[in-house]
Image 1: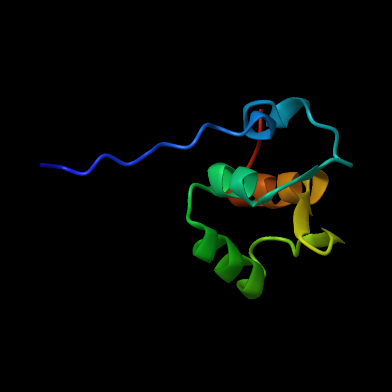
Image 2: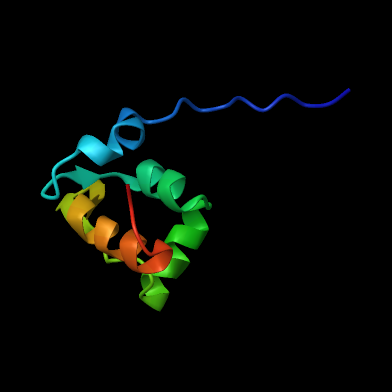
Length: 81
């Protein structure tokens, strides 16, 4: 019998990414959804320099700036709508 995997809900910030201001910050699940990869790959991309470095918001919260992510996505994809 196949094991069912519990699917996680799509973060609201990912659904509304286009309407977020450039000054907003998003957490790792949103970044994973934007680039379509795992958490480990997000960190590899940060280390390589293909994704911007996140900011440490507090002791346990790390977030990426939306404006910086948009710049990278535009460079990678040519344009964003």
